[in-house]
Image (cartoon, rainbow over the protein chains, first blue to last red):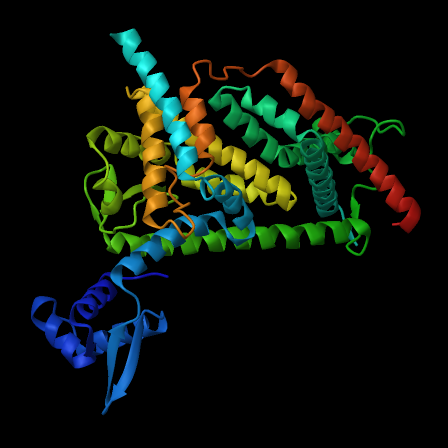
Length: 128
Length: 328
């Protein structure tokens, strides 16, 4: 998924205002950003096609609202940019690592921390 | 049938293709049968040598393919022109009628199948690269460049990672930044910067591309060992920058804990290059006061030499065997 600057701004508008049609979004950006109603319409359409917006027809116009929250979208992008890198065919590679870190319990982390603390104490003793 | 110079080129390509196949098979068998010994041997090297050995291992089918076809070429009558010709003998590996290439023969089929396979892998990996670039572009929209070192993403998800192939960048979320003290933050950023400086995302992609020619399981082993080596090298560069081993190790554990507590019921954020991948091994490596130091030794060249001999004779034997059965 690729998002442009205007798409981000439109999404931010909808996160803030919950919903809006093309004219409402356009009038919001008209003074600050310029552009045309057509540009806003096609941006809303693109975001809808990317499954980031939902829309309902009210009269002659579509009223759009965000389908995903900002936090969820960013979390998804982070996951995509990093886990996609591993590739579908090598998902088991991730799984192999997740079986180490994914199944890692607080207790295992405590044990590692105890080892670290022991070494740190030795270092401080030597330094001191 | 293709006759002449193109026939020679295609025959050499067929030899290279067969060698790649035989080498992949031999290396995979070697790793499968002696997995523990191979891993132990690789772990005994210092990190830079370990990385070079892995690169050599994953690219050796291609190197052997090139060397084998060159060695066969000097037995071709056409190489007389540059004074390299070695008279073929029935005892030594040789290739019959090198100037003739029959597209419908087993040579032609092998070359065609190999090309389809190689193109499929290249397409898959190129697609992955393009998609990754697109997502990174989207992420850039939501991030703010702090300085030349990293971009800050306003998100509660605790994460730190490096991505980008030509111009790699480090990313840090506010969710992670807010939970780290100054030194821990410096360690996380130094680790990510080490990945940026050595172009690890691109190298990882290239390595994965070469590893994709091996059977899945072997490819996964190679990828995971390389990935872990890259993490350890990045950890090493943090230590070289003046941070204590134990502080780096405790930062690793702290980040893992933050990540685990953020979404305890879901998969932890595996993506972060900083805290994923065999955390325990990394901590133990950081605390080890006698790290592996073995360097490259010339005796290690014995393995590729043996593989080359195996490839040469296998190509020749396979050639004779198939031609006996199929009569070309």
